[in-house]
Length: 112
Length: 113
Image (cartoon, rainbow over all chains, first blue to last red):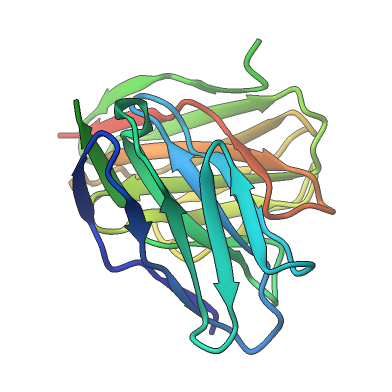
């Protein structure tokens, strides 16, 4: 079945560092890919969707690029800030059902 | 004002007891979902619904029941709570045409002693 793999459980960076969170997927269909963010004490919220038009998605300074060859859609940000500290989930729409498959999440901790 | 609300926000239950978690949404979305969140597992889907009167099993439905009496309300029921069900539970709603964009509530922290 469809799956999403997010290996990094925790990432610790300093302000202005470059962020890269790895995510790969497996599906027999055409993927619909996106990233969610969850701030402390809140529920997750949609951060960005990777569109098929240009294989990219961006929001709030974050960018994700879809690579069909490596079945990946990593999340990047050039310069992280302390307010970016949160849990980031990569996700994909299940091709066979009206539901979303989430990765296990990456806890980003940005030091001031 | 918040479009997806959950109650209670915190709950302590005893093993073998019955627990009902409630969710209300004002988004007028057809789809609603219940997830649990655990360290190392991320978000896992328990039950979901396409509309009033419908419930579907998600990926980990064992030990849980769901009820969707109206468009706005979706409940998660633990008939016989066990310590392994200690977790944070999230409800979400979503438009049937935009399945990927789900709107989450603030979560309910459940502890089963």
